[in-house]
Image (cartoon, rainbow over all chains, first blue to last red; front, side, top):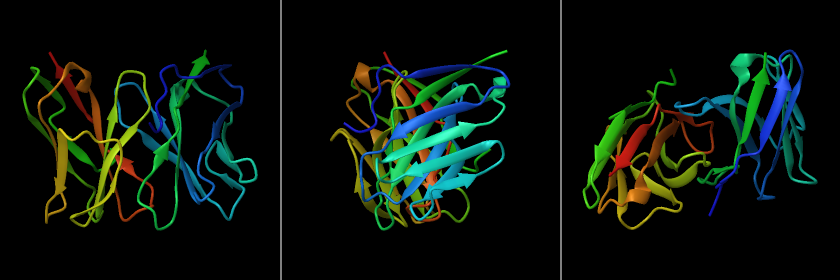
Length: 112
Length: 112
């Protein structure tokens, strides 16, 4: 099935450090990618997106990098804060398509 | 607050029963998506509607069905419920695919 992860990868970082969360996407035809943050008991929340004609996009404290050659996405969080602790999902879709595929997710723990 | 509403927030029912989950998309969004999330798992895409028409189907069981009404709200019907159907069910909406999806708070279904 799609996007099922029984054991979420976990990243543990110290408060104030930078975090890098990686994602390998599956469909070379995908041309739109999104990162979502999901806190416990809540719905996923949009963080940042990138289209395939770009390889980098920056937001507030977050940067997404896209490497189409190896079908890899990363999310960089600068100066990680305790409030950043959550599960992070990447998602891929393509223009004209209607199905969005979510990655399995990575759990980020921020140690104070 | 994403602007997507889901009711009810919690639902407890017995095996064999039938339930209906309701979703109201953000104002102006034409597309609605349904996802299932079991404990500590990723988001499993179920089905998507665009302006009242079904546009994409994921791993949706035959016991499950959905529809989008003329006022654009959507309902997900789950029948002959089994213990394994216990999960969080999320609805998301977007102006049109493949735009960013905005997620509701979810309905937590518990089947006893």
